[in-house]
Length: 192
Image (cartoon, rainbow, N blue to C red; front, side, top):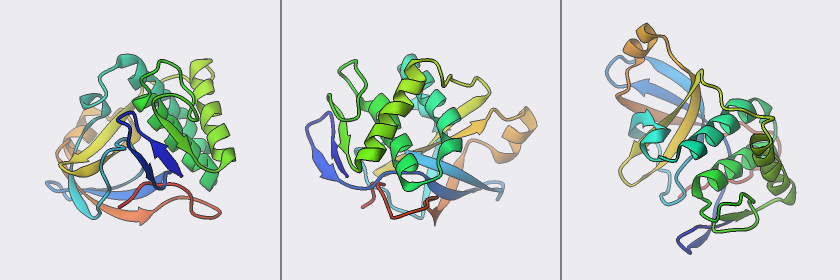
C-alpha cells in the first residue's frame, strides 16, 4: 500500500487492526484491545510504554471525532478479513487527515492505495458514516495510546463505570503486540 500524506510525503506500508495486550503499570491489570493506527507520521516500535489518553487529545475537530467514533463503534465488528481490516484503517486515516473537505481514500490531500477491494470498502465505510447508517455511539470512548517518537494507536471501549476507571486508571500502559486479526494474506499496517 502507498500513503500520500497531507505534508507531501509518500511512503509504503501496511494498515489494519492489531490485537494488543495492555498492562496498567500501576495496577498490573491486563486488557486485550483491538487497535488502529491514528498516526501516519511516526513508526510503531513494540513493546513500549505508552500513555493512555483520549483521541480528542490530538484530534480536536468535534465532527471528525464523531465520525471516527462512528467508524470504530460500528465497523470494528465487521472486520473479518484483511481487506475489511485495511479498509477500516484507511477510512480512519482519511477522516483524520483529509484537509480538502471531501472524503475519498483515493483522492484529495490524503490518499491511500492498496488492494482495490480494500479501497472500495474504505470509501463505503466512510459513506456509511456520512449517510447516517453508522452513527457515533455516546457509550463508546475512543482512547489513544501515545509515546514520544512512537506511532499513536487508538481503540474503542465502552464508557467505563467510575469504579472500573479507577481500577484501570488512565496512566501508563505497557503494550505487547499479539498480532493482527486477519484471515487471508497480510495486508496493510504501517510499521518500521
